[in-house]
Image (cartoon, rainbow, N blue to C red; front, side, top):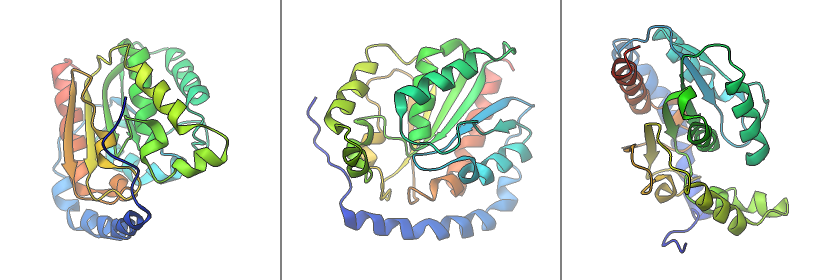
Length: 234
């Protein structure tokens, strides 16, 4: 499938200098965020982006814990971008859970793509997915890390075909897709899913690396998790 957009130009990485702004805004918005809708002990699995681990989502998980959720990272260390192997491990871990209660999945960048695909394959185990700047079109092809995959001997065109093929199996779990047109790592168009029936796209203003600290994203996350819990009668 031919796309009309491309990977971000190298100059777009300058937008990542906006990241410290998100920290400042987060501090300024803290009193208002403290009034966000609260959870009731629901489990939220939070997964990091390519090249990152649980330390990158610590602030986000602490926010969710403050709201009354039970957030947890993953046990896979650094997200090395091996999507197929990682996907199988995440599904196995989720299916091995003793609890029958479905969980929330929150994923940043590649972590969000993985969250969607786990939900696609295990819809009964997932209540709602929230993605932050996640490339759901083309895999790494329309991101600034495309060259890193090519250097590993992986064809980004072949990965794009594999990503497209996954859509043959419908994604039925509700998804909230948060994205930014100021993203310097992932082309924002690659975050838009035109093929799944229950995806809400919400634009915020943030760098890619700032999405995990964005007060706008935190407000949206709190609202959507609370609304999903209410809808599902939890």
